[in-house]
Length: 150
Image (cartoon, rainbow, N blue to C red; front, top):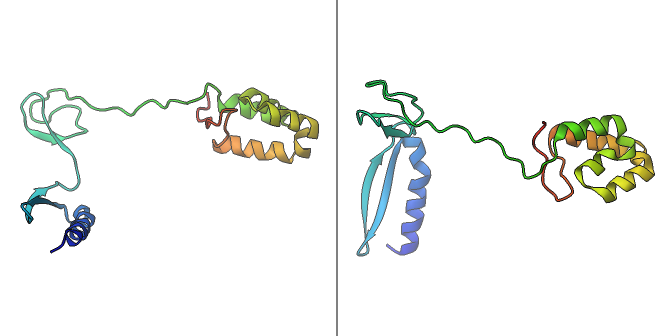
């Protein structure tokens, strides 16, 4: 069996493991393949209790057996790469979009002047900016997406 066949076989088996709940690891040992099995419990991550050592689910706040508190990971707080916010830009665009004031706010000075001179592209450009702001896809002058509303 060539090295190329071994790679294809292990990729095929790696693709199957989430469906069957069983992982097969191949170790290359002096040119021969050695299969080692690892079970995965319904694709759920299990950890050990800090108090009694029993196996519990990773999202458990306390151990069901001994009641010891566990370290539960919390979701990270979203961090924006820009200090600009969607709500002020949206309100500026809604009320003064024809003058391009929202573009001055986010640091797009050149296109702000162009919108000011064309009255927001006769309102069409301002309307498009309003839709982009509402969907959360608007970027600031440095190209960072503005993601936070307040």
